[in-house]
Image (cartoon, one colour):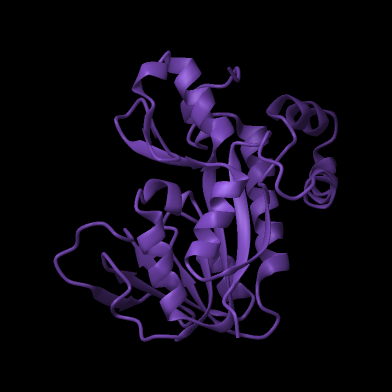
Length: 247
């Protein structure tokens, strides 16, 4: 069992230094991943992330879907800024086939969406050939930590190889191994570029280094992104993957 409460593992607790580091890693990873030329980006993080603003500052246009795959009476479109457009819809039917250049599904969007296969198939439909998708999901490490913390081993719900884990608030998260995340992407018709843990440095390590010198944050981020191997799902509470739609 990891000595961190489930709400801390989900990023909603009070581990300030670690989550400062975590969000810096995400921002730098997105900066490296975004298309070099101005593009149309679809964000499926449910309005919970800061990524649309970062992409907009980089010159991209962003369609930000709120409450993706959750009930809504009617889709609505509202222009939020010159570069960010907010949409509420329970699917992507409002988008034409092959109409967006890249898709970001951060904030555990495909773990919250239990039928991730259907959601990602819709993503592939709207993605242009050669377009890329960046997804972040809960890892098996996180799922096992939650179960151990609550002594809920008997409540582990499996259908085939799908791991569904109950959270203390009653919600369900779908946790993935690296192999399962690869299968999810390839099953939707995407070519997998890489799968890796979002972070491998422990909260205690991050807290110690930042406590010694706040200026070391950028060094920690570079170390995180440049050091750990792909497909290692034995560490890290989240997995992140990049895929590309074949030309």
